[in-house]
Length: 359
Image (cartoon, rainbow, N blue to C red; front, side, top):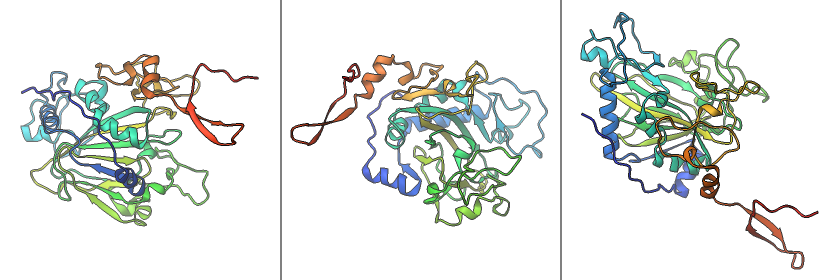
């Protein structure tokens, strides 16, 4: 079965209360942002991928021992070994990164206009799409311990924001996310020597953390930070989208059910005027040889930027496909404050980009 959700879009306007909630809590749940047809499309696509039915998947011939396979981060678009049963194939993947560089559907949901509408209000108006992830957390699969996303994906200035799209209904039994409400005000705690991660070492009182993302709180140093705040379980229905900043501490727990999956599509974004060295596309020469900047690997989703960016490989409509003039026009023109020399009052007027200051 193949279906594609129709491209119809009415701009989502973030309310003042939603804006405040995101700033106060560190996260925001937008209910029903994806349409029922879009949910159906994601569910069908993910089910096909789990069984290795996508035409883009290639066969994997390596032996697979279900007693030793606990789920890995798969960077290649592969198919589960053909000899596995349907149940074993469904359990093969845990999460897959960056499929928007391989599949049109993943690029399209990374650049979903409703998601970009919300991001435009929260971190915009200029948005760079950095990462896509597909989570397939089946029965019995482990969760992920307390962590901050900017620990893994640094941007300068730090404007990182995630958008977690529920493909299935999620609750405390099949591994919904937990947030440490208000912890977005914390800095990014740096890793102990020898461990991967990024953090703020220039603040008096910060300390190095080990065991980040470890589900065992006794071995995860961020657990004591998370415990300073109320911890909220965020249940969601398929089609809901959870937005969360790069500083807020969050986690998920084990899928304790016997027959329910917790599948989700996650995008990560930053303001397109933030600098990053993360996530360079190794298939092209996409990292600046002097600064290490990788912005040219990531898609300009909305607005404009003075930094380099990538275009969508599958032609999904976004700002990257507009001309420089079209981007400037779509972004509108700022205003400047002008002083009335006679009255002494301040006012504003549109800026003329071609105007030069008089000597």
